[in-house]
Image (cartoon, rainbow, N blue to C red):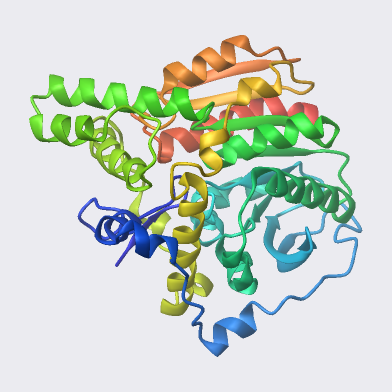
Length: 380
């Protein structure tokens, strides 16, 4: 049984090795150039994913309970969202999952279900992810771009404000979603009460170099010459080999696990509608596709162009960054330097002990604390 890490986009087959990296390690570069995902999916799953638009105006009164699962026309394609909450009167949170192809929808109720009494929660399978990818298989023949996905996010946010009667929404991004989130709030700050970033990525060069350097230092201190040799053999980033980022992450996850508290196993059991073999296979295909889009076949993917400080360091809305102290992907030193340079109406940096890049109970509690104490009062 595969275990899925939606914030980072890796399937774990039980031995600590991400399946996508295993595939990359056994494929020649020539075969990667001609990689195409399989489009096989059961008829029953296709029926579940048939795009159907909902009527406008879900919140006709404040006390309406929300439980919506539907496709919405965004950016010219049908994109999957779920909306859950006990009252239309509550502030609305739009979650931006990691990856970029790693939908949080199958796991959202297990992780964030208790928040539904205080917030309306919106999960979105982004372009190239989850049910959105499954409903639009031709996506695999086109390139993902950050600019297109940011426009999707803005269009979705505009839809949510109309559909649920909100002036603004709260934006939460994790890992890849933290990149997308910054692009969105810089583009249209008027749509958002605040931004909350978790596992905040800042720039390709800074983050990759920090991960590479810190991992080697930890392995050397532990007398782990095998890991030192493996990572040093890659050479310092930037890289042109798409396998290298996965090799690095495989090793950083091992080291994060030594000093981090694990998440409850129940979190990574997908909800029944996502648990069919066909659906899990399709989700994995989306993960493979988006991974290659992110790193690029020659190290020239979306990630290679990320440099958030170039977007400007002044924000028109509050910014809150929550980092795991043991994170070896979004290394805290990099995120903290970025945070220190930000100018915003309000800002706070939270370091969560015994937490790596993947979420755990301490991380979810830290997110909830910021939302409840800092953002909810301004969003009422």
